[in-house]
Image (cartoon, rainbow over the protein chains, first blue to last red):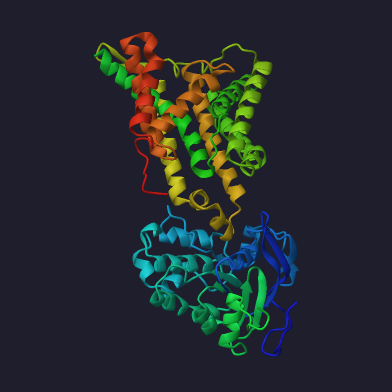
Length: 250
Length: 291
């Protein structure tokens, strides 16, 4: 269980809480006892190398994987056995790894699907077009013809129009040029301003450190580091990321 | 002139085949289920029509919406129970389950209705009225109505899929089930709606077939399913208008076969079917760019 180092700034109850999560992919243990608590207004970053279990953690929170043990709690309620679509309508939205847009639908239709079961809130398709002005002229295009960065923006838009309370972002930077990644992360403040809490998974450590209010590093399904970006040093992150110890015990 | 006649009759028959095929194509396109019970369900619709008319003595045409509705409800229920259970267990299971369903339906019909053939008697000139072009071409109004019905059904399906909320969800779920779930869509419910629509179209197809000829419990597998498959494969899997193209080509090929020698009717259809399979394995209207 994680200890809270610096109370005070947070609202008192976590919006999303994961306790001792163990997840298997067949025989393989992908997560062995992960715990985390995300408080309203936070940007919680999960970092780690390929295969560390980051995406599995996010997918389990979204309901796409069933954990072997442990629980996922949302707004104080246990949602471990709840179907993914029910979690989505309750306010947990996810931008999945690889965007996963609907290729035979147009840009606007993709957003409309996202808005079909939307909660009440500030995000509308019109507001998405305000954040990403290029979308308006290309709303009738199929998303398959769009660049990776554009597709990623549509995926974010599709998740946002559902007016989630928690937005799960899985590897936004994957396969994108650094300048495009910067541009996409530049929209994060507007998302936070609207009251959305963000839990993101990122391989790009410096990007994660820049935006996160709190972070956790995973290595082979274990938590190797937890804290705020201010608390952790570069060396600590590197050690936690790659699993290298200081040399004395090897 | 006889050849022109064959082509015209073939085109009109193609409408009926399209009616059979569009439901099959929709089920495959959305949930990747090859419904081997499709033909039997059409037969069931025919028998339900016979039953309703016999029990209530209402005019046949009035019973059509009732049969369509009943089949749509059956489609939703079957999808949410038997077929969904099969889908969760893998693609091969859906083949086995729908094959089993086909056998159950066929034997159930034999049990309750015997193996006697039945026609859907409308009892007026609706079935027999025809008009002539020149001296050699006689066209049955019924076939024209059925062709128009097929075009209307396809147009309605297209309009529904492209314009409505559930149509959009059906396409989204067909693209990426998991991503649709993340947007809050219960894909099983969406599957159920797609199945209800497919069963609705198969009801129309079964009733139309029952009007043009007679049905018996084995018609579904022996005739309807095979024609529907051939039309879908010729037209291209998952393509809506492809079913009409496929149906027309199949119908024309059969009529031309019959024109050469009356016993070549089936042969003509299957020769074209095999030719298309060899030359355009994706079907004539399939867009390969996707996927």
